[in-house]
Image (cartoon, rainbow, N blue to C red):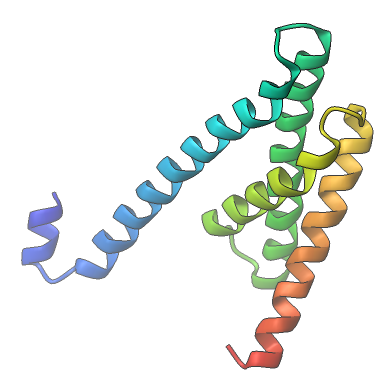
Length: 130
């Protein structure tokens, strides 16, 4: 199908489809590695490791949700890259406290940090005239 689209002159649509596939594949790999990165220092599969894994999942979901909601409010359309950016911000900001915070605290930490990072990104883009 990519070859037919290329021959018809619709390369822009094909390029975006390939790009999103690679973004999703990259996010899957990063997420899989981050679960191991966060739970690995525990050293064994016990209650602490399960808390770390659940907190990591909460960080991914709340970070992506917060960034995605703010992006939707601004542009009035769904955007996959906004969701993926928020997921990465959630992972990054959760790493320091993933073994110490409970689920609700992790939800608050990653939601606030993802929202603030989104707003700062918008402000910096406005200052840079991008």
